[in-house]
Length: 514
Image (tube, rainbow, N blue to C red; front, side, top):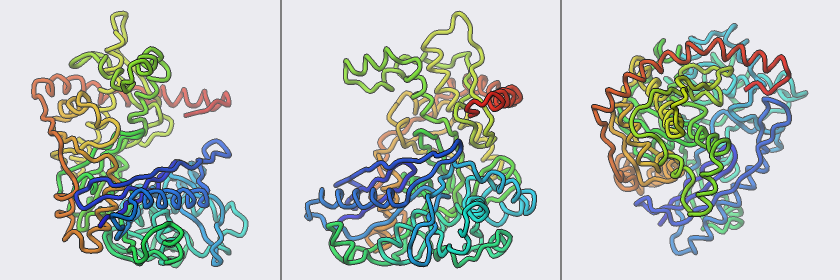
């Protein structure tokens, strides 16, 4: 018997079929277009997303050949974006994804009128334009007839559950990303919704993760080529689901996912709603692993910094990869200078994430000289990415979120050199896992718990998540990197004013202010 985890992302969706040991039996992926009709506007067409979901569920089931019947499915998804539906089931326009910035004025007005601290104390989310409430306010104010026609607003986990089962249910771990959910009482906040002029009736019913909410409709099961009676369970937002799929189910543990964005997701046992958390833009909301909470620390640039180097400065590396069949990133990283270098890169090439959340930030490189080598530059890039996450770890610690060990996933986790560097800079053990699709696996594990295939989260992790190698910090190197890190801490404050002036020049010239 097998389980399915479905991950609905910003640019594509993936389904995996796994056995109880976490072995992938089948998988399928489909991309869908991200529409950007104006600068700062980024949208998904719910119909195109649903077509992708149908395709991956059909293909994944076909790959099993019917020899390993699917018993249950759970959905994990991006946060914040949602689908507005009329009572007739019609879609009221495209979905605004997290980094769509058109609702920035609504977010600023919300902070001025309602207050950032009050919002954070209720919802665990530092108010920003990325969240659902500002997006809904923009829709009400700018789409004629929107408020009158709106029946339900469903984030993508609950949209898929609704299409699969007809049930209107969401998980605590995704409802929290709307900025409308009380993370302490675990219900829709009447205070927030009243201030926004919204009814709680437009949202799905919140439930804990790892609970069965219904069965796939028989006619849809037939269409997908699935057996009838497959149960659907709650999972949650992709970051805590990825943490669960990486085995992060104890306080003091975190997952470090290095993809296009690098995100650390930490687990802890009680809500941490301190002033330091709010000041540095750290959210706090329920984990997919029941009884725990998570905080996110992230850098928008992440592994895309190496992609930038490849595309701009790596023509020879691309040619070698084509000639030898080696991964181009392995070729680039192999050239990095061994040990610390006296060259610092501020990795804000795609604006700044936590702890600054500065959309006008810029990247920088300090310490260049005529003796600087190509290897020094490559090493400075990965040092800078890792220093940025150490900064987040230290501030989280001061805020009351202690992290003792990290589990690494994503493209960056394929490099032993990078994982050892993380351990040396963080001064903490970093574990490499055999997980390739942690959010999907976390969703599948949630489905397994929901139907009783696993007794609880601990049994699911023991069965399905496996550590391949532990990278312990070299204390001598840690001390050397700490010297450079103390200089790095001053880099953003020193360059902030210059970055903002460059942004203003870009905007004044009609350029693409990033």
